[in-house]
Length: 610
Figure (cartoon, rainbow, N blue to C red):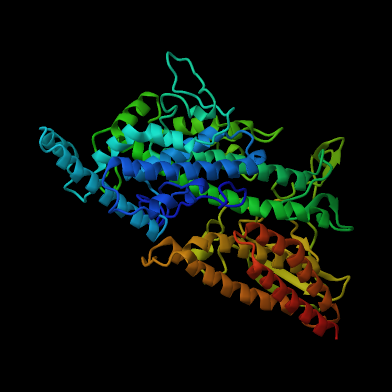
């Protein structure tokens, strides 16, 4: 099982995480990828009849911890070049703490039916231990005290007994999970007299005391910190790739996130050139932007969870809908509050100080979870933007806009259709290149899909008389992007419309993925239902537009092969590459889809040529 990945992420959806408050995934914890594949097979398979004492249970738990440690160590060695700042002892400590949560009934992750059986088995095992404990102490006068401390009248969870069992045996579990830790691997011990000390190698395997109290930090907080570390690590990789694709080595080019070369003009036209040299910029920026949108939503969920917990837990109040063990929370949050962590900003600053977040990409600002605008951790960066208003000139490793002495630059062309030629009007639903979710960009359309007068539309006036006389004028829409041409040749109009369709299709697929996978959505006011309804209206709108786009060229049969070539190029150089990078399962189904689509394009092209 893969334990470290540059492709896959964690799990945040409400039906996979306990206590995530609502089915709109607006607030809750996110289980890290490491936790999704925690090696607890040994615990799942243990029976309940043969385990009726604390020693038998300890043997099973230690065996599970040993397997987990071996799994992490093996995978870490294979992936450590991608995790230069990750301490293997920290990785082991995180799984050690998760095992502790499983044993104590505090684990937030809901995996499958086997996980439910494990929960029930542990309840039965601790019930057996409790009953045997009373039986063994019946004659020595300790039974009543033990009964008062451990009896569980509400649900048979035996939380107090489980807490005490873990406290007495955690040192043995730590020794098990670090059994094969590297000799030179060290872990910070809890500070004494403000002095920080290291373990004596092997992550403190031979030390007298467990060198971490991570198992006494609430799970969602541990996960939040681990999520931030992984976010920063992956963001640095993706940003570096976008920078290289859009600027080249040493600022040798200047590409826009929608695939235009901002340094060149198309001959006799006042706008930037679409260039194959810039396709890689588009192919890196679109997936990067979608990835950032998804991570932003996960961040908001966890930040909301933090704010709710920190307001409630320092008091004696118990969250009513919580179905997990919270025995130790009060003490932890009292100390946590003393360190000025009562507001989310203080905690987010701690996340900013993580090694991957603080280091960032060379020449770029550190990641800032408290930032806004272009300093926001989820900003797609200056590299993934549209071309500036003026054409850019790159010399000596520096790129600047080319402006006239009066500061002016690109001027709009004048749109003058040939006489006796009636342009085709196309009302295009246009999401633009702004850094927002697809539903945010099309919010006006989603609210009122029947109206063509809302801000999400552009009006395209297109004509095609010959190869020398063909243009489209684009006007309207509050989402008109600065630097985009307002007049383009019809060939480019076709390319822009199809490319926008593909980009929005990818964004819709990303936005609706969780809705499609979730079969339990029944509330008619649920965001999933609203988004799916908007998507359905969007498809109908695009079908109407497609007929209008084809009308521009209906009498130009000799030129149709050009458009099939453009379609083929778009799928090959853009759509396939982007979708492949977003696919979580790169298997034969994807290859089959690609082959089928290629065959259809080739067939249409062949019929046209004939």
